[in-house]
Image 1 (cartoon, rainbow, N blue to C red):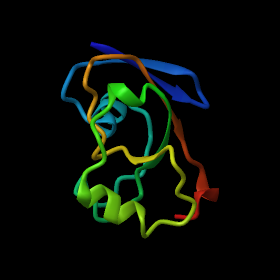
Image 2 (cartoon, one colour):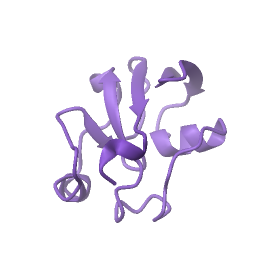
Image 3 (cartoon, rainbow, N blue to C red):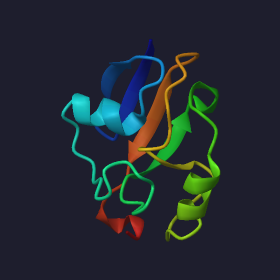
Length: 102
């Protein structure tokens, strides 16, 4: 188990290994856009991974291709539907507002 901290609210969620960040957020009733239902096709679940990079799966080719097409992407950008919790360390993410370019 790992703890997922969601900013800016500061809410914490206990997440089991192998769970996507999107699934963890939806399970905890945290609102996040997810137009393509986790298929890495829309980019609406774009988040910033603030801490715990080693506690999350590596970026896949599919995720990287979608991130390349999104405005406002940075080195901490991930798609919540593709980032899987590994359970090795706690993770802190930042949800993006309407100003994220999506």
